[in-house]
Amino acid sequence: MRKKIFIILLFCFLFIHGNIFAAFKDLDINEKYYGVYMANNLEALYESNSDQRVPIASITKIMTAIVCIENIKDLNQTVIVNLQEVQKYYNEEYSVAGLRDGQEISYYDLIATMLIPSGADSAACISLNVFGDYSKFIEAMNQKAKELGMNSTSFANPIGADDPNNYSTVYDVALMMKYAVDNDIIKELMSTYKYTTKDGSITVHNALFVLANLYGIDVSKIAGGKTGMTGDAGYCLASYSNNEEDPLICIVLGCDIRGGWLPHLEDSQKIYNYVDENYEIRNIVSKGDKIITLPTYHSTKANIQLYASDNVSIYMSKEQNIDTQKITIDYTGMNILTSENKKGDIIGKAHIYYDEIYVGDVDIMLEEDVPFSILSWSKDNIQYVLLVQMFLIGIIIFIYRKYCSINRKKNLQYIRNTKF
Image 1 (cartoon, rainbow, N blue to C red):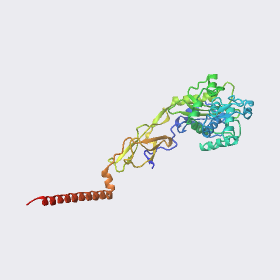
Image 2 (image 1 turned 60 degrees about the vertical axis):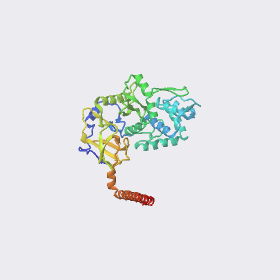
Image 3 (image 1 turned 135 degrees about the vertical axis):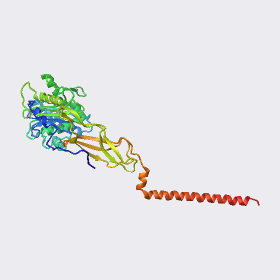
Image 4 (image 1 turned 90 degrees about the vertical axis):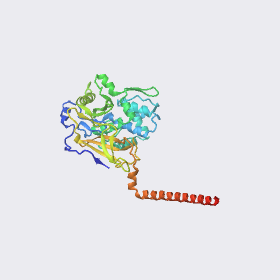
């Protein structure tokens, strides 16, 4: 069942962030393609050329990690490095982790040495071993992209090397990044500054934070991410913010390469700063808010109110106030309650919208038992009540007759024993 609790009164073109888009343009962002999104639902706070297909360089390795993790049951499983298979990445001066020929290394270490320093050798080693076939791995990358809704994305290799068939868009990368940060392994590795393989043979450092330190760039708002850079792609960065409660995802692609200048880092920090200064998190729905009232069946209460089990929040300009008439809540779940429903049961889910923009979901929890009413039950089950009544009457008649029979026997016995 879907119930509309509040009705949208304003037209859908009145977007909640529309009146401050111009301010984002005034930030002087150097990237040609970028966007900043709420991580929980990928609602755009601002985006520019977000549907343009462009090369994404080493950001590709995020998908390589996803495919590896989802197809290897035990990431502690090891493989043997064949340096001849990955030697070209050394010869062509890609960023490498430093794998050695014949080295035995776990998939977890390969993922770490791929994501943290952007090791092309580790990415190649993964793609050659997960399915035992390079082309099957690339096929799996593209299949996963389709599953995630990355409809304007194509992968031609596992490292992001320039190729006409290796491209994506800002929004598609945001979709991939959201999926990645929902994975604890990838999220942790993208935020790790220093990592040493289990055998102690290789120590790597996070390219994002190393470059920031080297050039004195403030990236304090960035919790983690994946950098990229090729001749065709320019500088690229997919990152997520350090706000644990309501994190942001920021994608910047296609920035010009110039010596001693790292605009993909500077601009990402600039965007996060702008959001912090001009937006704040507002609860569209707060924990304990009444969501819906449901009727009961065979209960002493005709209706019971149901409440939100948690907050549902959104980034909103500090200049704006929440307009409750723009809130729409679609409820899906049970449509009637019985005494079988107990306190703490999840009855359904509320899908929260603000100005027709999806914000998030919240579970609807029952905060009290549903009391049973025998009277209400009896009214709806009169046939059973009559049967019970007849049964009870029968028992009473049986007991009465039994009682009378016993009394008659006692009286007869008394008469026989009495001498007149």
